[in-house]
Image (cartoon, rainbow, N blue to C red):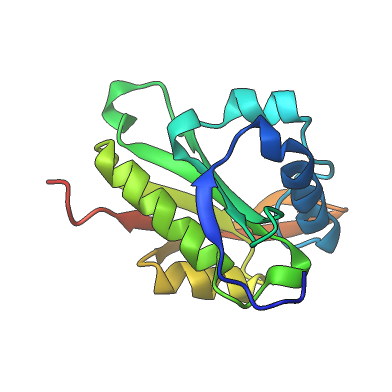
Amino acid sequence: MSAPVSPSVVPLTAVHADEVVAIYQAGIDEGNATFETTAPTWEEFDAAKLPGHRFAALDGAGRVLGWVAATKVSDRCAYAGVVEHSVYVHPDARGRGVASALLAALIDSTEEAGIWTIQSGIFPENAASLAVHARAGFRVIGTRERIGLHHGAWRDVALVERRSSRID
């Protein structure tokens, strides 16, 4: 996957399942992506993610370079326009615009659906993720200190959000 990347972004479906789960696990194994220790099965992933707000970035051969997906934050009607997202990029495809393309697709789909806030929690040590989110219009709104144990150590999480400028 070292060739230059000009990803096409498509709706993420079961066709992409094996590669999506493998990329998720690669991010988990690196230690700065999530509190999770194992990737979910495709069935668990599919059930948890909102169908209209999940995308895969593909290379010219149709291989998955990365993915983005969102979940509802709450069933309460006051939070109907708020989602939480994750974005993961294959280690060999990083630094070439894949995450930016995926975030742009997510922003477009959520704004079209009337969603006014996209949020996520990012480990502060994950500088690349914080940077790509800042370029996509996200801002750090706070740090949840020592919010959870991860491999025996307390970890902080930076809470980031992007408010839609298209939704009043």
